[in-house]
Length: 85
Image (cartoon, rainbow, N blue to C red; front, side, top):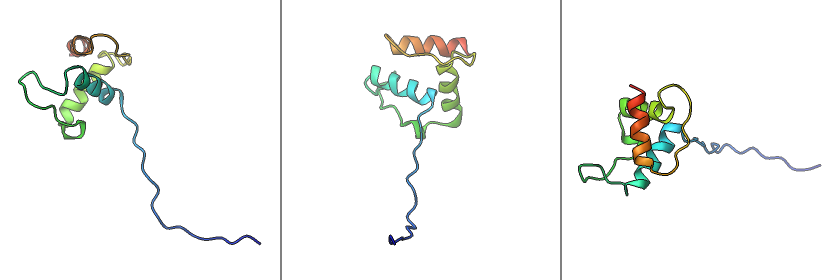
């Protein structure tokens, strides 16, 4: 008969990136992680809830459709954000 054992270690938590987080990271990559004022961009988790929600709306074009970011990421995300007002 095979031996059995109990493991009480917690399972790892895997968190999938949201559309807004993916867009934020694409933008950060496109601009070298530097804000328009010349400072370092904060991490996604450091953004306010309002800022993260704005990125989520921008990533969906303001109408719920997810935008596939390609080409000029900076200009594309800004255009999407202005449409989602």
